[in-house]
Image (cartoon, rainbow, N blue to C red; front, side):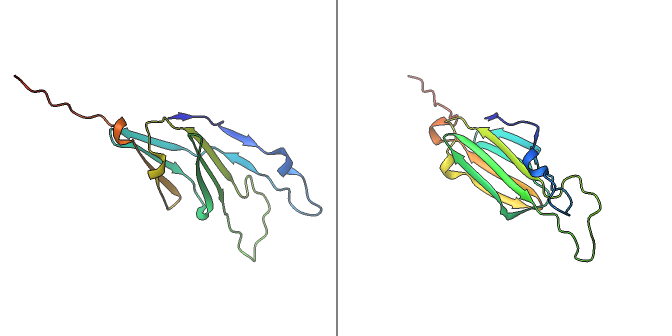
Length: 135
């Protein structure tokens, strides 16, 4: 499994100042991940604070696993934003998966802003013990 992402990217087109409004700043943030591997497969934990299930997309294509999400930071109706560094952060990260993994059996779970992906190994790629007989 290889990580093929940048640390973060700034989207200059999203910084344009709209007439009479605060400038919208969109920044793509690389979420922090922890990856654990054992003989059964890989478990990946990605920190996605403020992300809900409907704003999360996990895709697999040509051996690449992509995570994209948009955080929602609500502003109370009676308040006006005076300053915001990042209003609605966009998260993105891509990993290249080895052919040893069974991408048809990936499980995804989002809870409290943490995405857990379980990626099992193909049966033929799992280590197995060979019985040795004596004659």
